[in-house]
Image 1: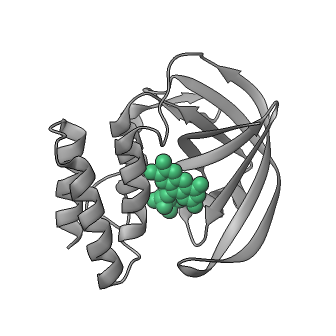
Image 2: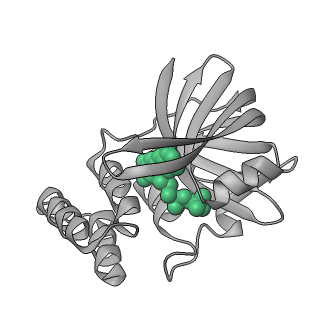
Length: 188
Ligand SMILES: Cc1cc2nc3c(=O)[nH]c(=O)nc-3n(C[C@H](O)[C@H](O)[C@H](O)COP(=O)(O)O)c2cc1C
């Protein structure tokens, strides 16, 4: 089994993208998705989705940190490819075409309190591509995981995340690093 971070594209009348961690075991793929979320909603309604790996941190940014909670549009249709009703990002380096086998609503207790999750098991119908990809070992992708929690955190927790993010990005002048700092400032 391998763990991968990637972009899950689900549909239910509209197309939704989200950064997600997945456990991949031959032709099975599993996720734990926090509820409520558009992705959890879509996967209960429409069983077909894609999960893509990428080497582009900006793709993670667009999938994870834009959309309804922010003022910025999510991935636009012209940044996605449509193939037999499946959608995936143009910048994907590997695409898994998947079909949900089962979903389960669960609740867990963690450091942040209790949380509602949807566990999803799906079969990988086919996959394409073999190119390079990045995951949480990339500091920008790791920072984005912290930032997805920023919106739902209280003021104390927000301050702690802010200090952590600024310390990690201190010497990073890349456009994505600048975008992440700007995003944090816009959220207040
Ligand atoms: C690298 C990375 C991995 C993530 N993994 C998960 C995950 O496994 N489960 C989850 O619920 N959210 C995960 N997130 C957070 C979601 O991407 C984020 O909450 C997203 O906005 C959900 O979108 P939705 O409401 O459109 O479904 C991850 C974020 C990043 C940046």
